[in-house]
Length: 117
Image (cartoon, rainbow, N blue to C red):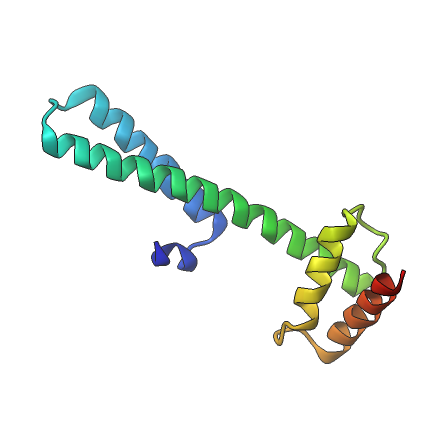
């Protein structure tokens, strides 16, 4: 399911809901034979995987936005994140080359301070 990497989280959720609607329509209006069961199984797999991945990506995008906002305002008490999530996100930010050196060094300082405590 590598093609899902190119879609936005909302696009993946729409894909899942669309395949769910197709599956429901298929169950209601088409006769039952062996090929129909293969198609139904395939649609069910696409539905479940895309919905799970879309929801997970949506949550991660929200978390990324919150952490980047904290870095922008230089205040990690702005949002009430659990300690383990904050440390994980800080580690990812430190190793992320798409952010500025200043942001990465600030995140590294906060991470070092949190790990010492």
